[in-house]
Length: 223
Image (cartoon, rainbow, N blue to C red; front, side, top):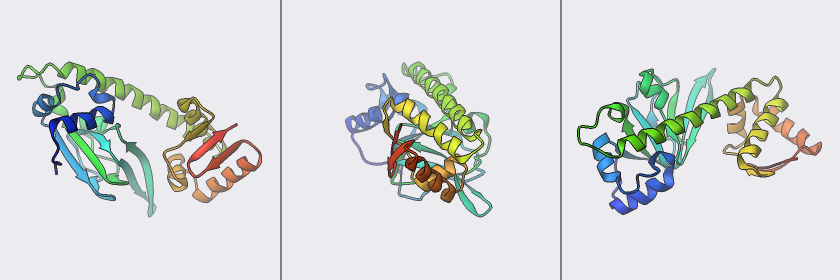
């Protein structure tokens, strides 16, 4: 459903949400009308799209967090997650392939959906914002491809320790600081790295005892 919000309030939220709307601060209302965008609100653990669904939209997380989850051997596996400002669904929408998991909210979430066909159709309304939006979109998709390559690099490591170190080094480099926060709790990190949660916890403690890392909940310092 769409929340009640004045245009100025919508613009402020969208400007804070991510790179897709960079440079579009004065054209949201016209752009939404042009694209047929929809604004949706979900509570925690609501399903935004079911496994196997062929979606026809790209989603922007305006607030909250979405997770792409799969059931494998009676276990819930977090395949990916999307936080405020991040984009979801471009690959599935453009290829018209069904989702390989369900899209579920991890907390109260606001989602903006943009029908992908309207993004690439010629704008009969003479919308001046289409070109900038597409440029922003391709920049984001390139960054997402790089992120997926980094995940594959982590998963290609042979041991739990090597996977952890590869992941933590990437997070440290992204933060450009010794101390940094990761977007997962222990269960989520184990799912992301495709390792056993107990084994991951044991390895973290070993690495801490060896002086390789310091951590408190999701805050880490990598020596």
